[in-house]
Every structure is written in structure tokens, then in C-alpha cells.
Image 1 (spheres, rainbow, N blue to C red):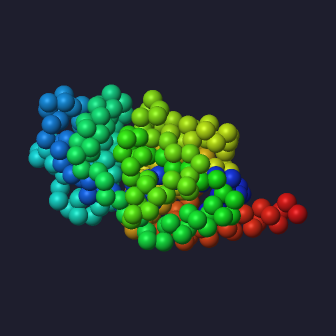
Image 2 (cartoon, rainbow, N blue to C red; image 1 turned 90 degrees about the vertical axis):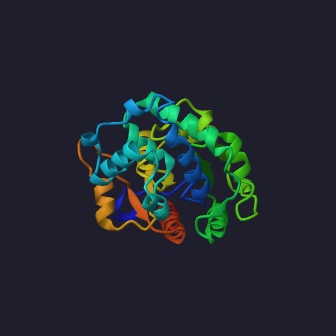
Image 3 (cartoon, rainbow, N blue to C red; image 1 turned 180 degrees about the vertical axis):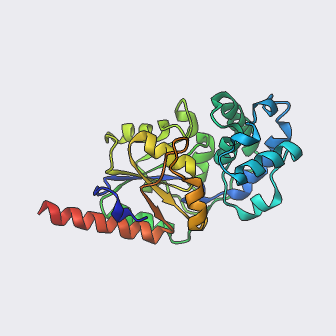
Length: 273
């Protein structure tokens, strides 16, 4: 699947997910998860965990069962560094909005003790953002994280302040519903005074990001920075009645994204003339 397979739309804006797309904050994230999972009983969330048989995939069922039995993540999950706290809570609590809200609140409390160190997910991402902005594309970023964390993290990516790249920065506590709801994306577009549509690209690394983009009515670009193979991608985006949301395209790195954006803008320029 490539971006050339989707209906033509040059990007007026590109909205990025933060963690595991633009930056790597896995260490602090997993430390906070380690703090939260042993407290599931105290939070009244154990009984809110979905039944194993309702899991989306066999791997999701294994994750749910392991957390039920051990109140922690399997070491291989943390070693792989491929799943975010948002996806973990989606796997654990499914459609239970209140349970996920409570879990995110507990995570925020725990994350306060661990956040601070931020590195670019790809060393060249800073240059790619510069190039995209120089092409006239409006850039924005969103995150499920609280603003108190984002306001710090965005200023210290490998020691650099990335604030100047983005015309909008929206955080989880700026909206009523976090991802996978579309509220964050729609809030960004509202701030930019841009209507939803395929001219707005949203780039994220998770199934929740794709769901958010689809629900918001924008182009959904799955950033496969984790290096999932095609079999796994087909598994997490099955396109079934129960799980219909699929990305418009998949990019494996920032240079692919840059190349696709340039190709679309060049094509748009040719058509307009």
C-alpha cells in the first residue's frame, strides 16, 4: 500500500503524533506503566479488563492474560519497544471509556516521576521537519500526554527546541476525549482554521492513530517506525466489520514521508498550471 494508491490530495497540513513517531520516550513511558499496573485493584480497574475472548488478536489476548496474572508487562514487550500506553489501555479496556480515562489519569500521575529525557525517533527527523515546513506545509503535533509534560518535552529533543516547527500543539488534557477519538485532530484543525479532509495528513504509529484519523475525516498515514512486517500490519488492520479502520498509506521512515509529500505537491503544482 502506498500513498499513490489513495485519492489525490496534496498536504496543506501534516499533523504528527508525538511519542514513537517524532520522538522516543519509551523508557519513561514503560516506567510509568510499571507503576500503574500493580495498582489496578486499587483503581477498581481489574474487573474492567475485557474478557480474553474479546481481544482483537491472539497477541492482544496474551498481553491481557499476562497483565491479569502478573500485574506487569511481559519483559519482551518492553524490550521490543513497539507498543504505547494508549494501545496498552485500548487492549486492556476496549470500549470502556471510563476505565481508559482512569488508567490515563493514573499514568499521568506516574509519568510525572519519570519524564524528561527525549530523543528524536529518527536522527534525521529534525531536518525532515525543516524541509516540510520550507515546502509551505503547515505542521502540527498532538499527543495524549498532559500539557505539563509536552511543554517540557518539545523544548529538549536531543537538546534542541522543536517548538518553532509547529503552528499547533494539542495535548490530551486540551480535549474531552483522547485518542482513539478524533477530538485531538479536530482541535488541531480548528486552531489552524483548516477544514477536515484528505488535504490534512495525520501521521502516527499506532492503530489508535489510524482510528483517530479515520474518525476525523483526514488522510491516515501509518508510520511504521517499529518495523512491523506485512503479516503483522494485516493482522492489526484487518478491515473487518468490527475493526474496519485501515491506513490510507504506510511509510517506514521520515524520508519516505518527505518524498511522498514532495511528489504530491509537485503533482498539485503541475495540475494547477
